[in-house]
Length: 260
Image (cartoon, rainbow, N blue to C red; front, side):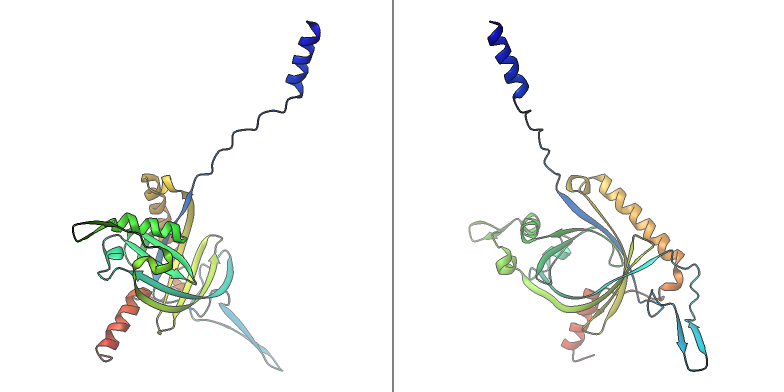
């Protein structure tokens, strides 16, 4: 009897502990808030003053815009070349009714879902990857009537989700990370337009993004961008900012009307 008890005790001691239950990571999404500006009022954010040196003396020249206050920190980010192709239905249902901008950026499927604001001061949720984009399109378009019944949306990324090309252009993007968190962007498009924006992004669980907390977070992000732009008002050129897609459509309309 004592031997049996000893064996039972040894088995309990030597048995490996059961593995801890793994918690499945919560799926996340990106919330983005941006404010557009017409152009930078200075040539660059990282070279406000320049020094020219000759054989006999050197001259230090600062741009007429007074950097007051100056940035706490500025980190230049790599310049990028971005090839965007935007897609929608023939009647533009996705962007007009669904608030979704579907694009392929340098070959990757992306979507920007409007979560408030307007064309200048915007709030978006960003999606990436063909699966997420397909689910997004299905949730907006649902089923479509055809003959005597309803046909379920079945398109995939290989056939552009059955959508038509809305716009296509190439952008040269310069960007700087200012004060450790604000991303300042200058975009120059291949059709001659220029526009800039100040961005803040945060990654949050999807369930939080879809609830009131997500809206509160984006409201606070917008207030912080507004304060940032007021603090550094000398950086931004005054005047109305025109978004790249709006400028593209205006350019296409002018060409259609013979350049008028």
